[in-house]
Length: 273
Length: 154
Image 1: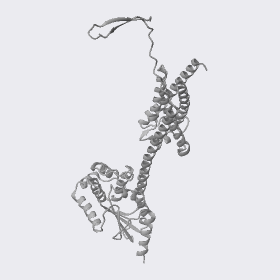
Image 2: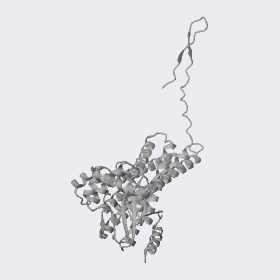
Image 3: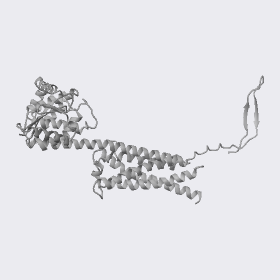
Image 4: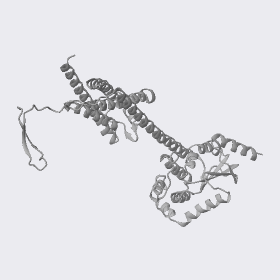
């Protein structure tokens, strides 16, 4: 395009008129492009380090979270094995093992209690395998619901399972569900894991009569049995779960399998003639 | 090398990067589609696809790893296509492409390590993706170098 003369209107002078002036044509010059921002080596290195750190953090968090899932699966599998293992052990009501066993261990537990889930998935199988199956120990489960409405409902359901002769497999199955849900890794209470429907469904899965179980679950008699177990715990001075009483006397909870062996072997030695 | 031939070479590299990213999107997209439906896809050539994908390393923050993989390839494709269309290639696009390829390369290296030394199982899609990501990393490194050289003080 050829350069053209520009016509401009000058602002009016004081007291005068505006006037038009014609300025000589000048070639149109394009404004120079803005200088391109440089990409320095330090910017590249800094951004790369940042990205590497973010990727490392995401992978670490993901692995940490999945390790929790993995542990939950391991616990659930251990309890599933325990359910299979007790099939050959004599059981009556809430008791498991030989009625004439020299050692009688009472357990006080809450189905939502993470430590109870942990005990069930670890030390309890040692007790069953090494003492109960050999006729040295009999376990008596007592409900001691202290963690809210779902604990009471689950406790009542276990009483109803006991009425049909399946207290132990039913209780273990409830602990297995909590283990699978990751209750040990992250405690979550009264979040709908135990509902009338889910507890009934679990009962049916174990072969219990649905109608009988449902009637029992809504009965005041079942709740009264839970309260009786609760009273038994209180009379022994139980304040938390899991708690244990050996031959009628409260004991301090051994922290691991070796601790249990020490306590039980000492008790066996004491009752042996 | 003359300026024109350098520009032709750079354009060819961007086209190559776009093609690699497109191939990666196809692989990761297929796998993501299968994973989100609970499947592991058809395992070609090697055994262990389901072992790898169903392991705890097959997910990242609860999402199948093929999903962020697909997104990484999408970013790489977008960076390449935008660079091809932009008259003055912005160095920031080259940096974004380079960083996305770094992420992809790191994840591929991590997964390959897991396959070789932890799971002892190989997933054909992961191998293909690792090769594509390695090629993309090399390509974007060259493109970033070229972009830095074109800018003053770069």
